[in-house]
Length: 509
Image (tube, rainbow, N blue to C red):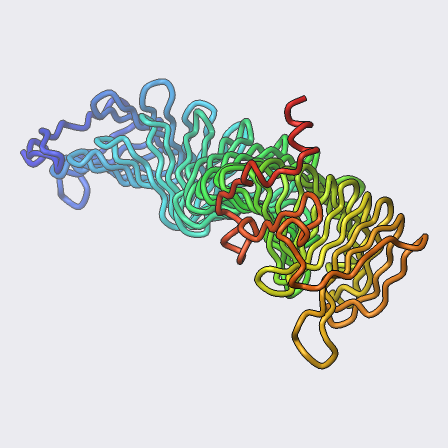
């Protein structure tokens, strides 16, 4: 008989049995192979039972058509309901139509066109459907579900609706037991806490934890802060994100970008951390500031940003470069604080001291304060330097150009005046006083005021011995100066002999 031919899977087809009907007619249009069944109809195929109000059974082809209140029961966990079914016993394929509903434990699938392949144990819809479980509701044009693996696949206009978020994509894999959504195509997850863009990863809809790959992006709810990396871990409930490889934390409101190969961000506390090639870029103006340190931290306090950098700090901007061991910057007062062996360069000036404060006005340097052991130098040629030294130093700028320097406390200076209209040095002017104020124009002193009357001398160039050319603690740190935005990552070490005596003593203590 035809029903005994092999099924497409290679297995031998088995017969459909008529288990019960209120009435059966064994002939239709003079064809004895067609059975007409009416009233409480029951069929059995292997261990699967099928129910309906009426049916045509085609004995020759081992198939049937079922009408009204159609139901398939497979075991005690899988039930499929519909208005109409065409069932092929040789292929073990059920084609359910109109008001179809599949129930598997706590999961329910709704559609109007549903095929169920008993051999592969897979059901699928192809003209729109919806899957609902205890937590989520998923809709798409095409969907596939396996009762054995508990995995559903959705394609075309996919929506996963959760009370807390909405996921939209083109293709999605969903495990109905763990309720984990596997992201395999461009996906957007929108919630009150922000937005996630990803094309590969996993999202646990129970714990709201995500593992995101392929340069995924996480936005805060205001969409002013983004986190992206080669791979991300993100908890939507806590707002905590962890980034690995080529991380970028971008604050588009404050125009600050943190990068590194590892970092994390806490949306609730507004705390960010970056390390391993960590970099901060402040890009509020055309001339951006590039800063590197072993570790960078950024926190929002009362809508203002505070940035901290620890160990081996190096930064570069075309008009300003510097190095130090640690640094702090707060957008509230726009002051950059440099600590422990700070060195600062502006054009041909070098500033050193115990601590340096840089005040910005709209990202333009307005004032620099050097506290304790202040030392400033300016190279005039390859072997002569104008030098200033004192307890504290204050430098003032206009439109980014240095126009005044004040030295307070034990002020000392060495200055090499140049003959008028020429380039030759007249000699060395060395002075000492308690206070000194220097007015500068075009990077040259135009007026110097001392208080009280200074002690000084003018020495001819030929009379200068090497030790007289420099003030005590003079060091030219040009070898440490960042040359460009990439040079901030260059590891540089201060020579031991170049560390000021007072700093060497502090290290020993």
